[in-house]
Length: 308
Image (cartoon, rainbow, N blue to C red; front, side, top):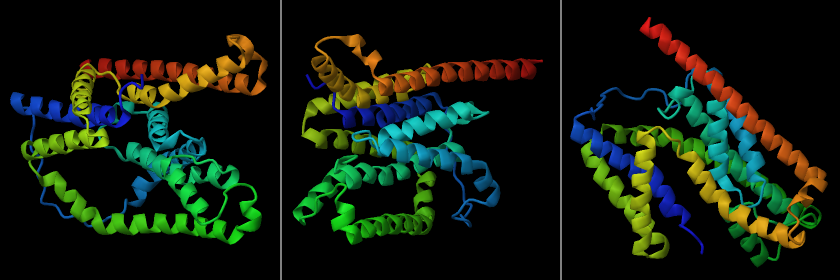
C-alpha cells in the first residue's frame, strides 16, 4: 500500500482546514473584515526589521542549503525544520503563526536556500537533490553532459553558467517581488466570505488534478477536518506533514537496512557515522523538550503577572 497521496493531504491540512475555521468564525460572528486604504510606500523592510530578522535569514538559509543537499529531502522538510528551529529559539513563540517577519524570513530563506543546496549532489555526484534537479539531470543527459565529479573537468564553463543562472534567478525573484507586492497585497481587501469559497474550489480542484481521482478529494476533505480539529485544540500540524514526507523514505531504507544486516537491528551500533547522527538527534530532542519547558514556564509566569 502506498498510503495517502502527499499533495491532497497537504492541501487538506493547511488550506481546507483554514477554510473550515474561517467559515466557523463567520457563523459565530467572530470574523472581522480588516480593510485598509493605506498605500504601500516601501516594498522592502526597514532597517529595524532587517536587524531583527537577519539571524532567521542566516539560519534558514543554512538549514535550507544543508537539507537541500540531502537527496530526496526537498524544500518541504527544510521549511518546517527552519520554522521549528526559529520558533524554538524565539523569546515569543506564541506569535508564530500570525505572520510575524521572523517566521516568514526563516521559512522563505530555507525554501530559497534549498534550491541551491539541491544542486550540490547533482553537480558533484550526479544524484538529483529534488524533483526539479531530476528534470535538470534529464536535460543535461539529453545534451550529452553527465553530471558528476568529471563535469568540473570536462564541462567547467557549463558549471559556471549554472552558478550564474542561480544568481540571476534570485535577482529576478527580487524584481518580481518588488514590482508585484502592491498587487499581491490587494488580496487582503477581499471579503473573507467571498475568498473562502474560491480557496475551497481551487483546493479541491488541485487535489483532484494530481491523479484525476475523486478519492483524493475525499482525502483532502478528511484531512481538512482533521487539521481543523487539531488547530482548534492547539495541536501542531507540522509533525503530521513531516511524517508523511519522511515516512515512506524511512520505511524503504529501514527495510533495505534490515535486508543488508540480515535482520540484525543492533548492527547500527557498530557504525560511527550512524551513532553520530543518532547522538545529534537525541541531543536535539532533549534541547527541544528543555527549551519548550522554559517557554511554558515563561508563559505561565507572564499570565500570572497579568492576572495580578
